[in-house]
Length: 204
Ligand SMILES: [Fe+2]
Ligand SMILES: [Fe+2]
Image 1 (cartoon, rainbow, N blue to C red):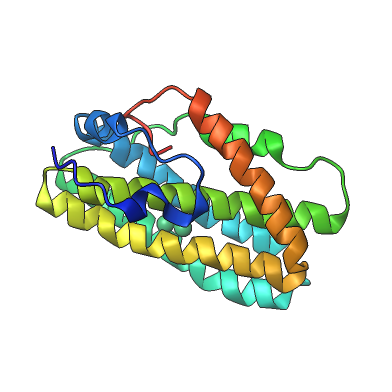
Image 2: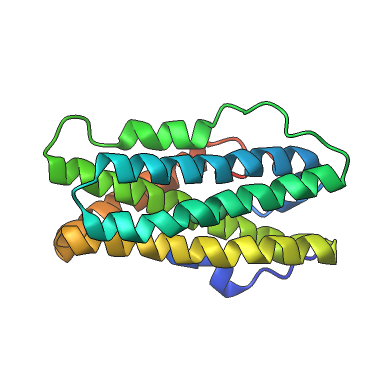
């Protein structure tokens, strides 16, 4: 087990609670489960971007920015699928995504169109940020050099996506409002991570 976790990882992307170090150890022994869960995360990222384009079709800047992300996330899905196939594994069934469901509970219900839009961007930014942090953990903590490199590629992409969703929020909503709500999201996510069971068969 490579336990060299950089200071940067601990503070990544403003997240208020770093992943429990035990998670990489648990994930390492259940890599097949992680691959299936990861495949669905990428698939859901692609379909959510399509749905965001549909819901915000009057926001042309968003439509243009998210269109290539759909392709990129689908590319990620295919990369994970290829890895499963290489190992003689099947995709398997989609699992219940407790983390994302808990985040959805925090999304504003009702509210103004701007408030709803802001939360649509920030929930995506948060999922990307946490995914990025987890991929970074895997890219630093796994024993297998090939798999460390495999996750490094995802880590770099998801860091870009996190930034993109924050930028999209700031393009349409004033920065002060975005900052304030982002801090509320970070606080909520910290509590969520604190109370969640550490399990190595899920990306989140
Ligand atoms: Fe991705
Ligand atoms: Fe992403």
